[in-house]
Amino acid sequence: DTGVSQNPRHKITKRGQNVTFRCDPISEHNRLYWYRQTLGQGPEFLTYFQNEAQLEKSRLLSDRFSAERPKGSFSTLEIQRTEQGDSAMYLCASSPLWPGSTDTQYFGPGTRLTVL
Amino acid sequence: DAKTTQPTSMDCAEGRAANLPCNHSTISGNEYVYWYRQIHSQGPQYIIHGLKNNETNEMASLIITEDRKSSTLILPHATLRDTAVYYCIVRVDKIIFGKGTRLHILP
Image (cartoon, rainbow over all chains, first blue to last red):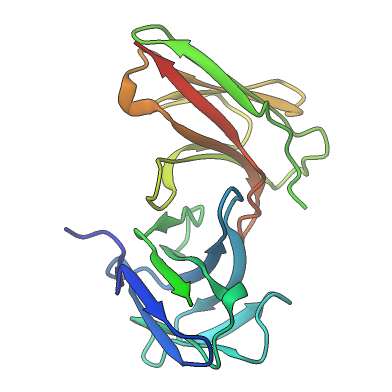
């Protein structure tokens, strides 16, 4: 399968713990996006990278959240001191960015986080 | 905020064409119209996109009005597997999702 992969698919944690999610984009896609989706809502943009550079962060991304893409390939999203309000589906998407492309984003299956 | 308006839900009989409307009256000249769908508990799936011309691929057709203020996604022969939330999006870079249209395919 050459699509976007995310791990783990499910994570249950206790309030106050730190969690880290991983996203592996489609090979050679140089843009990588993170979104969060709560029940009954559409996904909300969190941040995105072009290669290893983090170009934009939403105001939804509080100080407890940090995202990295150290070598311009996979990315991690870490949440420190989790709160119950962090319970959501965390989605990753990747897109190509080369001349003539239209930055179509392809999504992974998501990581569902439950904070107890 | 999302720049599109879609009906909250729609029903379509299996085997018939599903026509999903979307209004985007404030679309800018460089913004594309994208459609995604999301089946329960899965990530959004790309369907189709266009700028001003009508587009067709193996999944669907996209009809964009001449003034670009609205569009229609057409699933030519709906099946039960097409039951999903369909999002119409206008964008240049990051996606701002609205609430989408919940499409129910009726057997």
